[in-house]
Amino acid sequence: MIHHGSSMTLTMSQKEIDRVDVLGRLQRKEMNGTKAAELLSLTKRQVRTLKKRFAAHGPAGLVHGNRGKPGHHRVPEKEKKKIADLLHKKYPDFGPTFAAEKLSEIHGIVHDPKTIRAIQIVEGLWNPRKNKSKSEHHSWRKRKDAFGEMLQYDGSYHDWFEGRGEANEQCLL
Image 1 (cartoon, one colour):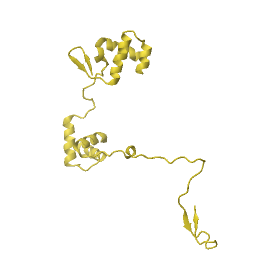
Image 2 (cartoon, one colour):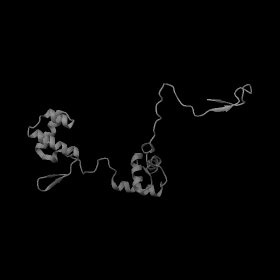
Image 3 (cartoon, helix red, strand yellow):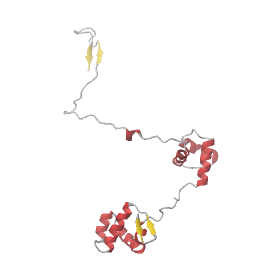
Image 4 (cartoon, one colour):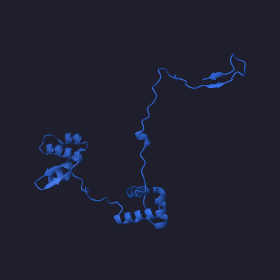
């Protein structure tokens, strides 16, 4: 958090705090725009734009304008409630894809299965599975010293020579 002035508290990400530092140094002429662009991994043109916003609005000019506002593609709460009620009453045991198909076909509510899945998770109707591959460690066998070298652990015991050898059964490796 950065305290700007006496009355305003501004919440910033680490990336934005770093930008404040670099742009402050740029404003004090401790470095040039090329060096600032390099430090921020931006183009010189982007740095010029940020420098103008920083000069006009201070650190607040570096915070994204949509911070704290709801997203434009968000499903309205009233519609979420309607979907949740339908899921509870008619489709409590449906998966997200099938539920999305039925909501579309029968009720005319068209949403992506991912949206329906998110609503089901919040409502406790769907339990997201943890990805096994991330939790389970699979270790590869150690490489052999020579190309083609492998250890054989299993064999097939059978009377391969049909009684013509010393012993009746031989092991095929």
